[in-house]
Image 1 (cartoon, helix red, strand yellow):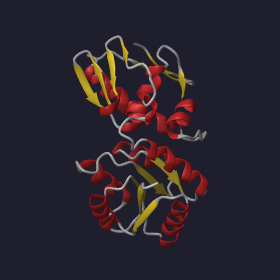
Image 2 (spheres, rainbow, N blue to C red):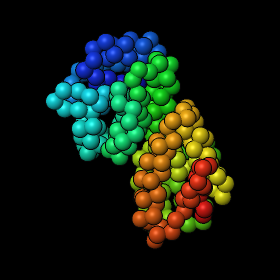
Image 3 (spheres, rainbow, N blue to C red):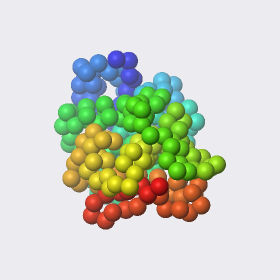
Image 4 (cartoon, helix red, strand yellow):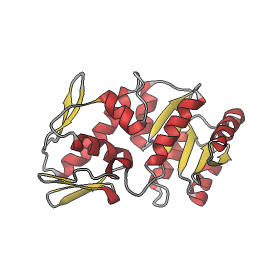
Length: 232
């Protein structure tokens, strides 16, 4: 295994704990203890994954995440954000910036490992859910897995890897509801009861992008208290 993981956290003990355990799993891990050096290493090393703490002196994790997403060379690198803050608005802020997943301290190493594996699956050129012979065209909708894009009619939009995975799962189950729990399990690899807002934020972004190329047609339906359905 040659996946490179960068850990950016000013808490030396946590940083080292993550490094040791991920190295035992076969990952190549390098470290930064502040946001300035961390972002410099992201640009220099182009890691497969960044594990990023929120609360750091001088430059916080939100700022680093924003810079990663704004840089052409680093914008697609998955980000797992660590924080001692469990408030909902902090999670939403991170997801709005483009953070892929969120883990609240204190956490179990096993949970960290699960989320790291799930995020690294999306570093492949073709998304996991499109690596089998799935349906790629339905009505006016065409999936373009190599580009993480969706085409409706003659218009096309590029999605983030997670947005593409969500849309593809809804697409393969078109006409049927996909529960929030199923989305969490199949996209992130886990199903915590308190992380439904994770889905809501990504669905909001996804729906906005799709409606921009669908002439306002609302393909993604929310089934309140249940999940989501793609109507094609």
